[in-house]
Length: 502
Image (cartoon, rainbow, N blue to C red; front, side):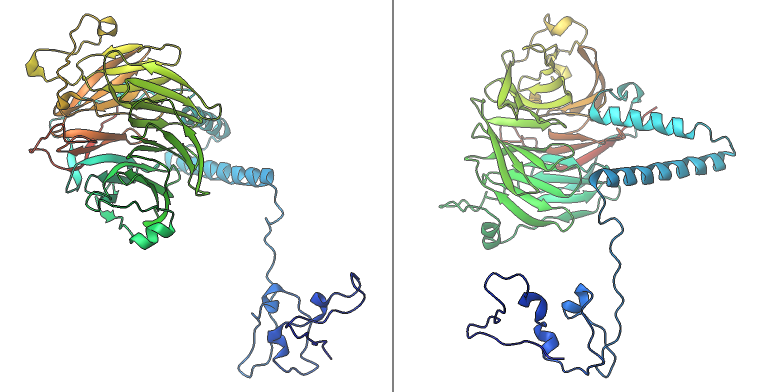
């Protein structure tokens, strides 16, 4: 058998036939170079039937003679549409649930399987409604009073104050960032820690970081914010270097640096179920990034002061607070916002309770409940973190606490640096520097204090387990964004407190 291997001077193949003719195409006539270099007997030459042979991946024996290669079968789901794939995965999940129900009946000695599908249907509907926020999980009423043996225990230690903590969606792993620039990844049950190592300046530049000269190397890695994606793939950190850094959780390697902020990055949050990241900064701007595509999405303006905290749920809505005494509800696609003004205080922290309810903490010790339909708080607990020795108590029964004096001495130990909610439930918590964390029950247009959990130090960040079985606190000797106060007796680290549910 002969091959047409004539070449032009430029190294290209000589074309045959008329110009523009489709009858003869040298692409289908020429043999690959690797095949031309090997001499075969006429009996051994066969047509190329697979991509594996065409790329040189052919089988052979010890003498170099060709042996038959099995053709790899095509993936049976290759031509599957998106709808067919969803249907197949759903059927697989239902079969697994039915099998689990069947095993439960066998262990209980019950042979009746008529209600399996109905019970699975109710379970899935309730789970979907809870995750979407349509119904609120009742957890606060199930929380039992802590025993004398219960208390916060430090599971991860840092050299300086911990400013931000986060939990994975399955509650098995935790993440913490400290003022010393350390970013930790740790196991909740065992406490085993892994440290994220900052790459060299050359690698950071290749990942998109813009070096600023002169550069303050002593504080360039100081981290002030942290967030983890709901799928557990990406970790985002930010701090005084004005960049948003993206890490791969599986390998703990730096993958991207987003420039754009003109001042310290103060807060971060992933939108649940997506790779969209929201960042707030001292430059009064809120930016949206797509981590999967490594791209900038949009800007959100409105604050007249430094942005201090941010929270996002499933919708493209962001809640932010700043030193301008306002809380903004950003409608990202519409590029519009709603402005809520705090009464005579600077808001330090905020979080969503649901799509229509929010919780905030102020620098005068106030914890406030907000609703979408009112521009002022629906319910206020004044002096929530005031020391008992000062003779001022918190009263959640009086309407909005109007008959109670407010502490305006601006002591850093009373600042409500952090608030958090157990997602989709009525359980909330707030932390300051007065020596305890408060648990709250969110009721209709009111919040009620449940218990005080003693913890020494400035509680700069809080995170509930999705199951509600424990609470994580980032604690330190200093406040989040400065040295307005100092508690030398406090321990810098991450503390965990178990919650007993009835």
